[in-house]
Image (cartoon, rainbow, N blue to C red):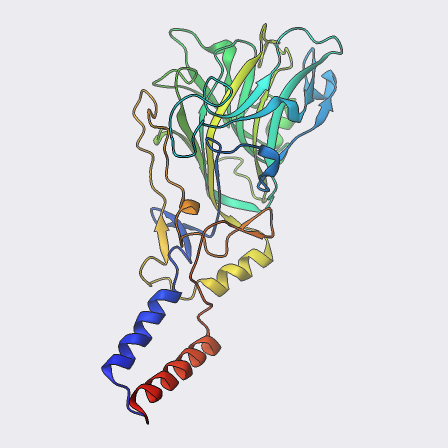
Length: 370
């Protein structure tokens, strides 16, 4: 059968339609990540409806919490405070104050010895190397620890922690920690190891929203604030898959969180984004099926850097692949549900190609009456 230019053009057009952007993954420089998690807390009305996240409910005794007081994590201290309009990207939340997910530590001395706090963790535990980012504003109320971290176990953990007792006109530090077997031997005092660093930030983390980030590779963990490199650690780099956690707590430990706070303290999160490789064999097979040609146009998508100023992101808006029409193909939330990204993708394998050619051939024959 003679293939006319018209027929060939239709075939090429259909081939372009069935391809999806980012089908091979997301990149930072030359590093490729196959999977993603993105949460827009500015417009999330109920954290319990988001299958990516699991608010934590647990208690820890003072001995386990390593402080004069223990912890009492509950859903009542993880509160959604979305913007008043889904079309807005700045302004107060529906409950007043900063919009976003509020993670609270309750003020006052607890009668039962357990300080009420908030914590949530990702449902997925297969995050194995990646770049992880959170837009946050920490509390100005003294006596808490705000934490954005990745966790496998107590000796494989990547932490960015904010101690509100340390903030004043001349001090605005972030504590960068890689927990390790060495820190366990030191009673989980990572300050006694080479994987604990304190960096003074160029801004007040309690005064505005800023993006905090860590990039984890087999060789190192690099920490950033508003896109500026703070430190690169090459010792005690984790070697197992794990999950992300956002936590706000106090144990009264004078050497760390201090507290408890006098009044309720609020850490607010605008967004969380993670781009990572999966340790799950099923997810790896899914990636192999959708990523047929690394060299194809838009087969990989660069992860945009933040555009925040040193005074914080006034608009609060950040880029989400999951808000685009065809940039999250075959991604999942909570291990099984397909993401909300819309796609025109048809698996472009031999069977599909043969079917398309046959259908177009029939159309061509019908058009020309042959």
